[in-house]
Amino acid sequence: MSAYILPVLFIALFCYAKYKKVNCYDSFIKGAKKSIPLVVEIFPYIASIMIAVALLRASGITALLAHLLSPIFSALGIPTELIELVLLRPFTGSGSFALLNDVLTTYGADSYISRCACVILGCSETIFYVTTVYISQTKVKKLLYAIPIALICSLVGSIIACLLCKII
Image (cartoon, rainbow, N blue to C red; front, side, top):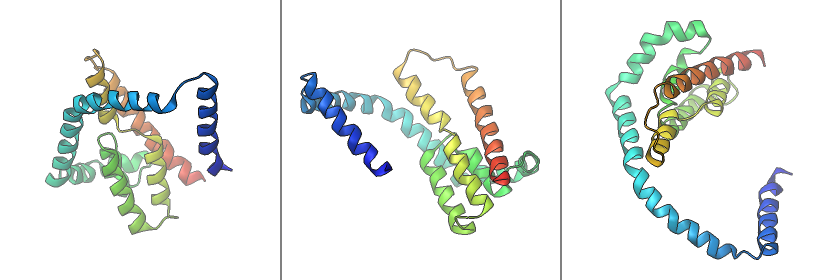
């Protein structure tokens, strides 16, 4: 049934557009034209975040932080194998998926650690990536409370994810 949801939505959208006498193709082209300046404007922000994440991983800082924070994360119920994932997830989506791939390859898809990693990725967001896109498109530049609260929520989500995986 889920395989039919997207095609049905597209057909419904095209029928609605036809009913409203909207040319779908022209609307699509107008939207695509507007996206090019947006991509050019956002690119420096995205590039800076990606470079920072690559430098953090290449320098070994994330591995060092994972080692130093392992007693705290273990006390919170997060497996030590997932600390680097929890630390990198707020910065990068693709890097998180690469770490998830490593976890799945190492521990297998049905292990407790792999299930925790999957749920952590599903319940968290790339906070700094979303923030850079948001800042680049709005006049809001003061994020004094937003980022710390988002990081705390991400950590709480990771703790609850591991707890739920343990229970289920």
